[in-house]
Length: 207
Image (tube, rainbow, N blue to C red; front, side, top):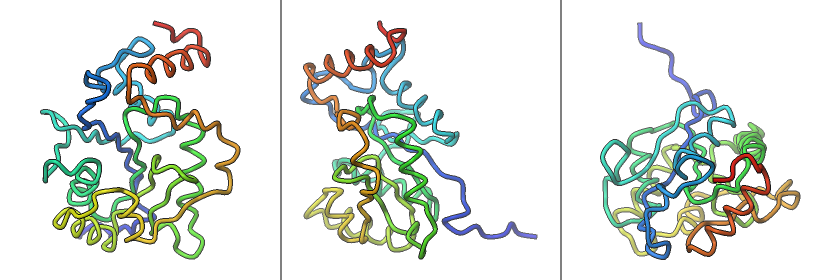
């Protein structure tokens, strides 16, 4: 007897870390930067585990990780590849370079994004004005939109993809979150600022 089909709301949430960027402004591979006694990639992996997600995929164009099916598409290329590997799954997606993002914020965002009112959990969602974290259910509509963007890459921005899929902007608690949680480590100066913030939040994490 075949297993019963699970719809997008019943299936286990997939955690995703996007770690495939070129890190050109940083000058080194951001995923390998040292933070709190580990690497940035491992630090973000632990953060997803803290939210209760135990199935985590790392999108990174090196052996041992999920490599892009179509190269040179940026983050959209990773989303396209995920959609091919995990059809009908739901994903909570974060970038590797946002270490101030708290597990509490991720948990609140996930709860709001997957609220089943009127089937809204079948649409992508972002938190306020921020593209990440991103809630993304790989429905047929989402997969078709990603395929179209990947095959006809006139605009590879996540914002354009979200317009294609009627992505939701969740604002109900975004004003209560410190905007510094959404800081990206793109330059050495930004990285030093983030390290100082991490140490201030938990002095035991100082390197």
